[in-house]
Length: 294
Image (cartoon, rainbow, N blue to C red):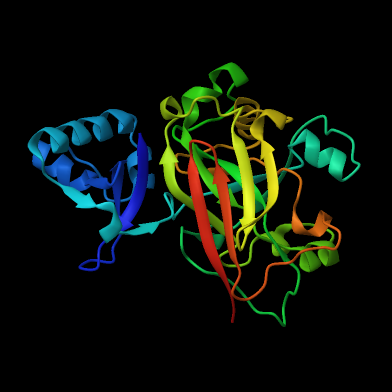
């Protein structure tokens, strides 16, 4: 199932929907018609223990009764989860990226965070002040969306706590990151965490540990790898995080980036005003965002 958040020109307030080819089923509206309580926000739906069953029943009813359906092209897409409690990020999680940087393979995941105010959606602008940072970089990433509270979860049980995956771009101000000596400020400027377009449930992903992943700037492919090069898999990351802190439904885990980021290129590449950056992941989707100075 492909889930997302959408709005119409008549109402800018987003609602959660299920993407069915070129049609989106309005899950709250379909649920209401079917006598099922489906909340408007996807994060609130994920917080319910039977969220998958509710979504499936709403989709089934809407399909059979031909109700609560909107043309995808008529809708505005938003980030699948706009209000996560936590945005956890993993550094150096691709073997080929470690080789590119001539670094040792880490023995355990390296974690940092972004603030939820960095979240933005597909088609939204990545915005920064060029007097504040001049070295803005892209990072293609597969993002875990937590679907069930997790605390001290074993790796073999971690899959039960994953709602699905989405596409993310861990936008980074390299000059701020290097100047500070730690990563929070350079990683979490407003709009520096684009995600989307959809949350894809794991039953619709062939193998999350064997997906092509890439990034393009204005059509030029600059990152091109596969999640088969993960150092730590999704199950290991959820388990590792849950030993340190409680993961809540709707939390996001950016799982690291492959080689080819701008700062590692010769000469280095930085995003600029007017650029369009696209991150793609096989079977999950493509996420494109324009860049703008303010």
